Image (cartoon, rainbow, N blue to C red; front, side, top):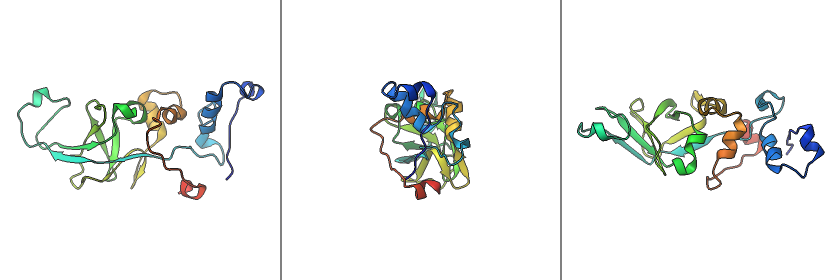
Length: 177
């Protein structure tokens, strides 16, 4: 499998130095435009999870003490990615569920994040949640997250992925799809 590695002259003159910087260049060149280099593709295709709980807000008491804005008819979904998984570095303010953009509700908890499923009445436990990537006709790109999080480049998002997060590596044929 052919791989394209980017390097800068100071690093190529001292290959034993700055391993971290050389690893970043494997994800994108120094100018951050890997997607514009012929034949190069981003190393990260998607960040996905699943809904582990879906609830309709049915009562109106205690709205004033909720950790996020509540309203009658609100439908809340829970995904098992939270602060411990560095969601504040790897996601924008919305995710994809059932091919629709849905907002993240309030601040993430340590091990989970709430999403507003009001616009997705068909969403069920087990449905896919996309933080980065495509679902049906919608897409949340790495650039969307980088812009929202005010990061410098897409490699910042890739490096932010915690080592505990499960990864699935694709062949060249799968990655091109």
